[in-house]
Image (cartoon, rainbow, N blue to C red; front, side):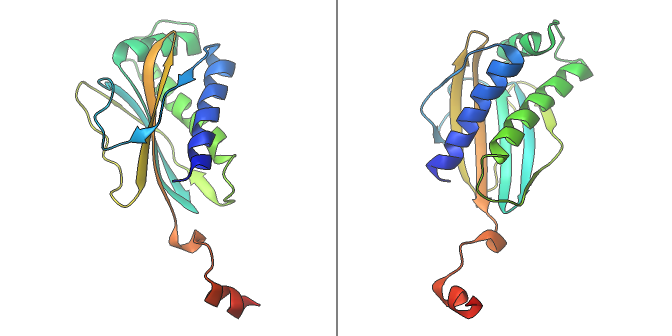
Length: 168
């Protein structure tokens, strides 16, 4: 994963939180997903990517942060067991992923419908053949992270000089 991809997710997270939640976020230093997280994730919104880029995006929060973020997003307090709570988390990861996807140079990238996992101590396993980066964020609502695991699809690979010569 290149710096431009990471920058796309940082910028998209800033944009969504600023525009939709009126929250200013500060990004920390990205690190490998294999590193121990800075906090316990209890709420995770997950969205898949397919096409020229394959992988997934995970927006993770401690429960207290998720409640604060959803309150800022919807204007109402919601219990984490409410279906509307999960829908709101799913919509946030959808907006962040969609905004980042628009910044990719690849033209054929699709995102899936989001899934939401709730519960203490859950783990979202990333594809083993994808590069995975965690981007920590902080805002007045609390700490959270955006994990991005992605790889270029074989069909999207840069042509080799041999295949470029055949095409000429």
